[in-house]
Image (cartoon, rainbow, N blue to C red; front, side):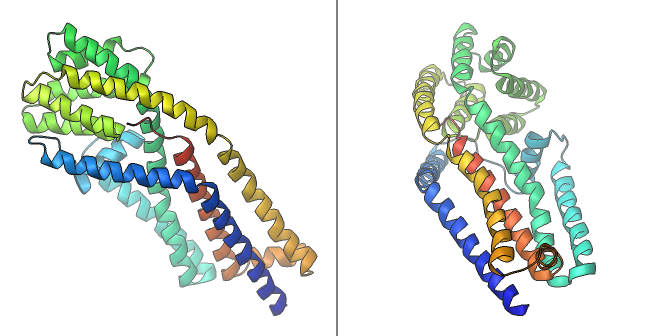
Length: 321
């Protein structure tokens, strides 16, 4: 029996390795494009540091609070701490349940996986929000520019007017309404900067960073940003056409990944029963009744969840310049 178990583990390890290799080959070009995008964002961040008065992102607890607020709608300065407490509570619950039956080593593994799930979900929700809002960018910038001109270059009035007049961009409308309320309630420049930063965080694109800088320059420094907004609108319009082309090229990758996981599970079962002579009951016991089997099952499910997130991230790219 021990020989069959060792052989089953070897087959499972080989299948996992082929699974990871297939994912790498499938998304190689997309990952290369993502790396290029990260490099471009790093250059843009360095450029913003050289711009006197450009908005700077909050760090630590403030940044986590803003992300939790955007992803789950939790308001208040303590939402970040609540999120951390909830993540740790979930991880500790899983740790206790696994420690009773399988020991501390596997329980620690389960704790790390369970505690990471809320953060993964938060990042996934943020990604969906940012993708949808970025694809509203052309309409957002066009409406904002028009209202900025109509309002005689008063940016706060332009934001309020755009939040009312923009029609087919529900996420941008909600974010602009929040931005307008926070700016009107602000008692100083720092609170205005924080409101603009939260709006920038909702976009998290290169053109969103530039838009936030323009909002701050126009609102706090009185600089006329008409030409800059016009250039941004034209750049986002070009990005939309490019995105439509790349979306058609990557539409099949997500379907391949969804089929790959159940096929892999079937192959593991057939390898255990047909090739090594295990009965279904023995297979279930080895897979879910032993610490090693449960560890492999948790790793498999977690890797598949991460793969789906990676696929969603690659296939649903933000409209950026």
